[in-house]
Length: 257
Length: 347
Ligand SMILES: Cc1cc2nc3c(=O)[nH]c(=O)nc-3n(C[C@H](O)[C@H](O)[C@H](O)COP(=O)(O)OP(=O)(O)OC[C@H]3O[C@@H](n4cnc5c(N)ncnc54)[C@H](O)[C@@H]3O)c2cc1C
Ligand SMILES: Cc1cc2nc3c(=O)[nH]c(=O)nc-3n(C[C@H](O)[C@H](O)[C@H](O)COP(=O)(O)OP(=O)(O)OC[C@H]3O[C@@H](n4cnc5c(N)ncnc54)[C@H](O)[C@@H]3O)c2cc1C
Image (cartoon, rainbow over all chains, first blue to last red; front, side, top):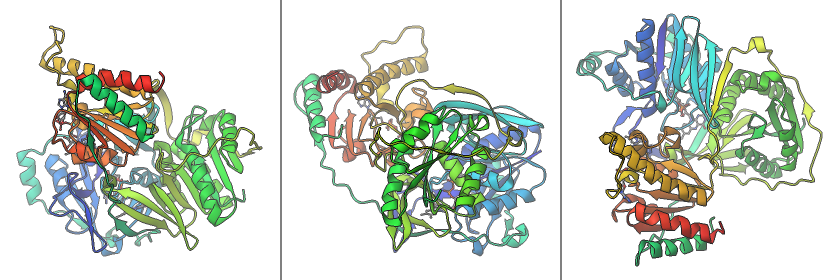
């Protein structure tokens, strides 16, 4: 049984974002693997070791967007595939889900597909469930632990608003993991060398055997959030009790409570 | 089911999540431009009370599927039913709360209905008959205007971004009941167990959040029990700090948050983390205690209405976003602040 893990390349989380000529700019900030997806790669590598299968890391993006794939290879994934086609520019989530599902279907004997929780750039967090829906496989999202996994099925713990939920299903299944799963490993020196030398195959729509899905969601405008004028007032003077009393009065006077 | 605007009510064990009602409020506002009323949709088991509440919060019509197969939320069962109802009645817009279930059902229903979903939206407007939504991207560092050209337009609303309608106990109605779409045999996921975290206000719904950072363990005056190793001593100290943070949250009826440094150091569970890779929150008041204000933390709380910062370091970046700041030791400031707030709030 093989495993696929889906990763996205995004600007570093410390990037200062701005809008220049209607386009999003992250300045000099490096492009990295989406931080959530490192947990997904970790989970995929652990489970492949338990089950004896191989891990294919999959990303959809421009031809130059190989940074996330290389990071995942360096962590230990066996194969990497970039899905790239000029016709995919401007894909919305449903379109992206149909394309990723078609790519997953091309990989042999897939039992599990791992995702991160959310991409830190467009922040929708819906893709894992949508890919599952296109494939017709169970969607096990926001997974903090995998309690059982064998050829017949999987039992996982999910984090929901109300606490923790334990669910089980058959395989194949789609799993999105959260940080509670466990710290991702660092790429090894050997891994980094291997990743640097790897040539990553690119699958265009022709290879996937599908037409470009037509997106229906558009984002005609991006903008910086309105600047907030905040006049900071530092409370000083007197004992901690006096400072606390002044602060409490000021908080009450703002009338937000 | 003639209304063109639907509101999906997310419930857990017969209780609606508070942000669900905001979808009815936002739906009623859209209806002023688009016409018609708002139809609320509720799925679950033993949810008569939720349906009654939906009328009280302003729904003109309520569709209810009350069935044992819907007792435990399973994405497949809920999505299949919602997509079937929407395919039959062809609403123009379905609004969901951005809860874990709302996100999932809306995303999957978008696949079934061959449409799109606009996720975690903070504002809605109608321009020439088209719904245009505003959503934060890059954890709120930027905003995007988004729209969906297919119907129904599925939209999830960020909690607390839209006003909750005023409950009117005199409103009532008779729900339209519909059957479930799948039998138990057709649902591949089974729920084995729940461990609900008891009490406390959830971060998403909290009007006030008091958060602690790495600074909560920094009190040289405390003497930890002698049998602890160094890491254990630090965590013990952090627990004393988080107790103060929790006391202030309790006095204000709020929830407890944390920075990633506090979570990574094992002071508090990840579910409390605020920030780019934690929860994005926008309470009326956010109190940051011993938090420096790294960009990834600010991304998660910068749209809070009022921010208060308590930090030893006058140059901590958190002060730039704060309406009020105290340069000082949180262990000295928090105890009298808890008492002062209690006194002013009559507690
Ligand atoms: C400004 C802006 C706003 C947008 N708003 C919307 C919107 O409201 N609705 C909509 O349908 N689309 C929207 N999009 C398009 C959306 O960014 C793409 O559909 C994207 O491919 C998936 O969304 P996400 O990055 O938010 O994924 P998420 O659902 O947040 O990602 C979850 C996981 O999916 C995997 N993943 C994500 N992207 C890829 C990828 N390219 N390759 C492989 N794995 C991946 C990763 O494991 C990731 O952790 C928007 C795009 C922009 C630029
Ligand atoms: C990919 C990525 C994602 C990230 N996501 C997040 C995220 O979601 N959320 C998040 O918070 N961070 C996130 N971070 C981490 C972030 O960069 C910071 O490291 C983190 O926010 C720092 O936490 P802190 O402010 O508690 O700690 P520090 O930066 O160490 O600050 C501690 C502060 O406490 C003050 N202090 C110390 N003692 C006291 C005292 N007794 N009384 C008062 N003040 C005191 C100090 O002056 C200092 O300002 C992320 C980082 C990366 C790389």
